[in-house]
Amino acid sequence: MLLWPAAASADPDPAIAVNVDQAKLVKLPDRVATLVVGNPMIADVTLQSGGIIVVTGKSYGATNFIAMDRGGQVLIDRQIQVAGPTDRLVTVYRGVDRETYSCMPICQRRVTLGDGDSYFKSVLDQAGTMSSQASGNAASAPKTN
Image (cartoon, rainbow, N blue to C red; front, side, top):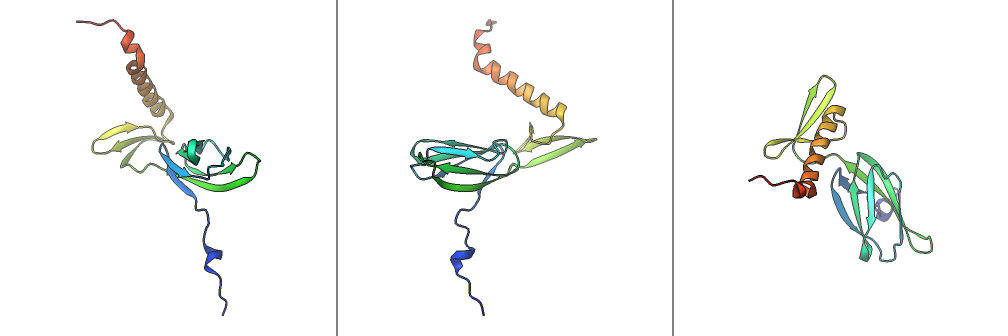
């Protein structure tokens, strides 16, 4: 009979799981000075004061990040796993083009990676116009009474 120590099978640094378009806070040692992200197209990692990092899911997939101290010593090398959205989605296919709607509680257009180009661009253009109007252009527009 062979006995293996329990510690040998335990994963000391489990992957950080985050969803696309969401962020997660993770505590690291205070002495972290530099962060390197394997694929910044999949996740963004930002160092905050007090050894806190913000991990933001940007695209589906897996990558890693490496945290180093001021001397270049590697303190942590961890995996980041980015999964799809968690809200209730309805996917509509128009031929080969895909559209995604978030249905919580009523269905609204939602941009999701993999949506058709025209749908994706249309939703982003509308959101950008609305944001622009709300942030300043509306303030300088003439008022009508």
